[in-house]
Length: 245
Ligand SMILES: [Fe+2]
Image: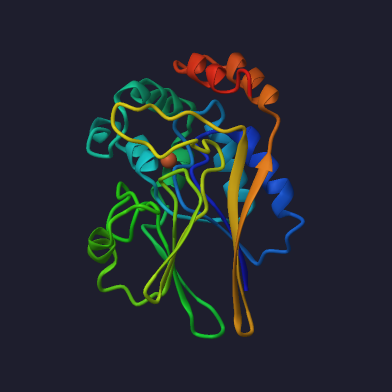
């Protein structure tokens, strides 16, 4: 089985289109989105339409939760300066779009033909806001993943691709389609973006398991044009990200 994982699209349909064009050539059996579909970017509706069109299994991210319940956005750890964009994104959506987001799953277990179990989530199996990085202390990993039967784990949320083996567990992060971060987010240190989209393909074939971390360059000028054509409150931030890159 060959599965494509996309995550953290954040309303950047320009990046998603580039990724989906690449995925079409990859002969995947299933597309799984690991959450944060909308909120921040200029085209949340188009992102949701594409996920429906692809029959993507979609996991709930913290920005998806906050889009459904914006009054709880602090609890879902939405950075303060991003809150106007979160509300703007919600206003673009129809009742059906919000119902679709409400149908996203908390996590998804996949069993490959060799009985290997993979667990997909947004932050960790316990919370959409948990951050799993290459540098996360092993005590924290033990806390986030205790009681899990899977041995392959894949999430998003950090916006940074990762492969990390710990004991018999393999932790993967497919990175971010719409907001590939240069460095991991830390408080008081606003992220800057890289001019490409990230995704992953995981394949179990006979006795082998492959995790392919992929990068697709997209047309950042087209994204800038779409941002300018919107009345997104955070438009200036997007424009700054791709200058001189
Ligand atoms: Fe995100």
